[in-house]
Length: 416
Image (cartoon, rainbow, N blue to C red; front, side, top):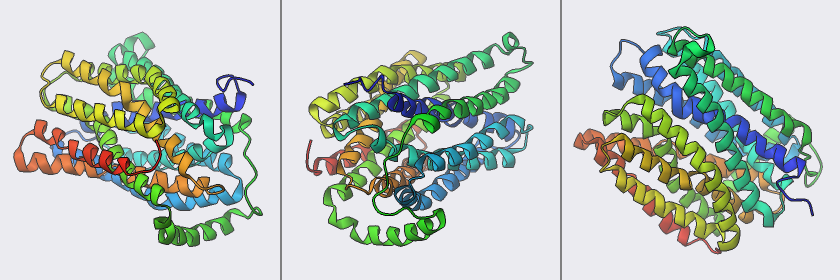
């Protein structure tokens, strides 16, 4: 039997993670937050810039969160998962490329492009996750899911490394300034995303849909009706319901750590260049770690693997309260990198085991729905504690509530 790492469809599927992770790393976590504050929102109080950025992220997440179950139902009924992925990805590529042409001070255009790119990125991921069921058997879910995440961290980290060097040494690349280098970086992300999407579009073959095919518009209408039905009956799937609640809690903490890490480091007075390098280090540590945790998940069961990752995140969050130096921040980056890819890949593969046959797209829509709505609770928790206490360290430590609650609920899910 051909190794899953040599199968054309599996490798092509994983390459999409390589492709779109450049957006998550270079744009979402790396350059956009800093550039939005220092270039597009010049002359305003940092809290104003933060609120603008928060609203932009919130709008994108809310739109996809509402559409996620419907898009999943469309995927189940039209056998058009690849077409939908390409369409939404193209929207994300266009929004990302447009960032490279926005002038200083034009924060509203930057926010609009982030919303457009974010919607495309998150919507395409619904169909990407659903395609896991087309490229892997159930016993391969853990390893294939981890393979995708590891490729994502490697590919996203590779382009991010090039972009970081480009911004630190713009003259090496024929650019006049760091600002011009950042704008050019957005263009490289768009090109990278589109180029490495093509193997999936060409080589992944979808399994036939259960039941007769229907048109896109009928599938959309049916999707809204099925959404209501699924919401009413999801309580009948106790394991799925418990898992989604647990996932919503702990993945919110994971997302918050990812998007707030650089802001936290800046609040502590650490240099932004060192923080970007630490983020880059996290990416490359996550590559082998995701593969290793995928293997452990196959041996131990994904539930045990996720609980281990939650424990590490809990410890890292407590450690963050005490860090003061760049070296300590690098230690934190390595620790987070050890489990960042693993907790995501194991969550996806565990959910794949729970999904009823023929409901992959619809139920993965709910999975993504919880993931998209798990992007505001952590930041709001941090903001509230910071406002009440005036202590940024204590505000970050408040995330332990999410990891503890998520772990408790996950333990109630049957299986290993």
